[in-house]
Length: 90
Image (cartoon, rainbow, N blue to C red; front, side):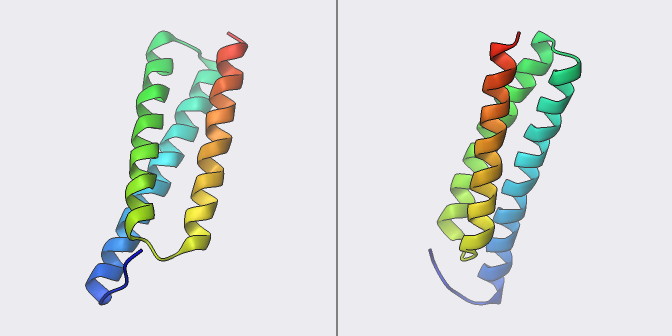
């Protein structure tokens, strides 16, 4: 983790916000698949999961807010489990 001036702090928050938005997009795609499971939606989930993982990794490199990073990790883990459950039920 790096600490710096206000500009880097804003950048850190932006990375964290992007990670949170990526996870929210993943969650929305999973909810859509639960009611309308199509190959297209499943592909969207896979893509969204890759983006969320990458975004969270980037946020972990720069963000100082361990609490928010921890919550994002938990949410991503929950979404991964929901995706696995969805795959098992198809």
